Image 1 (tube, rainbow over the protein chains, first blue to last red):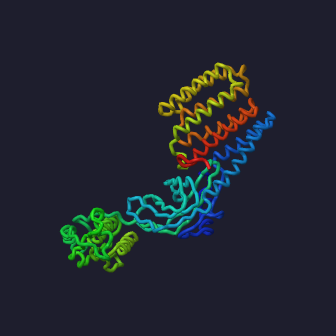
Image 2: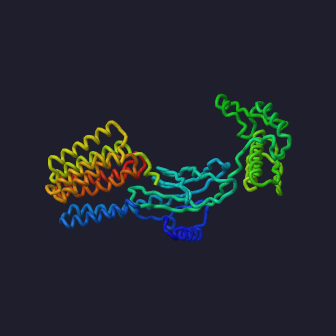
Image 3: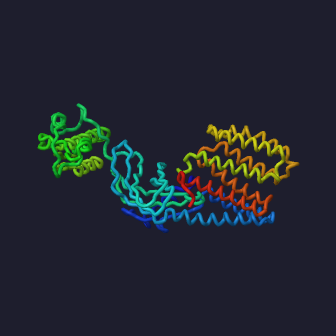
Length: 314
Length: 157
């Protein structure tokens, strides 16, 4: 739509949708959410029906008239089939999308339908679209997201569309799902002139290298990320885990981001992101100090996610 | 739509060529020996290209191929008559399009033209058996249309 006023009309339509269909964590496509209009081929098909009708009446040919009526009935039947292809399709967000700046992210969705074919999914207003040829029953689907700068975004409306089975009707929906898109700073190893401070990171790296290969038998409570999966495959009765270096486990590391602006801030955040990941890998206890905010010492994936989210919002 | 960007299968193109050959047979009352021979040659070349899996022709190449044929048909307007000339042009357009098929979206117009061409065969043939054959062709064309919008290898129904 490039004609004048199309942008205003689209905004008005989006406001209307926001009012009528607020974001939900899970939803089912029903009559209120599905739109259906003839496609270009559908319009040409209607022209064909009219042409054949005129040809049939002019030549007084009942078989051509029969053809015309059969194609008309097919057109009407396809309208229903196209609608039922999307009808009762259930969508749910499994988790918030997480990615790093400069890397494409994906939103994990759970799709459920009795029988849906050739479903095209994408974000509203975005060119990036994906095709799901067959959906029968429940299926997990990773919706690819466009590249975004660092930050936290609300998931825009999705666009689901399909022209199955004969391409005569375009059936689509704009479901709104409540989810966040977290874009963390891209991890970057710190350099000498880094405007970032952490409690003796050099010693920490050295400790990590020397102690990383120390192994111990698996005990209940050990982190799954520390299990040596390759060894587990060869000796399934003896699971082995990487031992958390004592020095690292006991050490308390603080990652600090100084008060900066512009590219210097982005660089500092990227280095802080890298350091947080390294500290989590070595099993250290670490905290995050941001200008005006401090995250207490902690460990584990949830703590790392909290720290990264703070970096994204910084 | 993304589905339209999928590659068209060789089998699809083969069935479409077979359909056009059948339409040519049904149109025989409107064709003379010269035009029939020309169309048979075009279809044979199409079949050889399909068999050898050669690259589809570009729009410019098809124009160069079909322009002399169209000129020849126009020269015969008086002897053919307007209605018969329309059948010639219809079938020529369908065969010409078949030379350039690569993606699913390339075939949408072809399917439309074939519907019209098949239905027009009722002007010449209204015997019960031939009518059955023509309805069968319509069904085959419907199946081809379904294949354009369905997942690969999807059976009808």
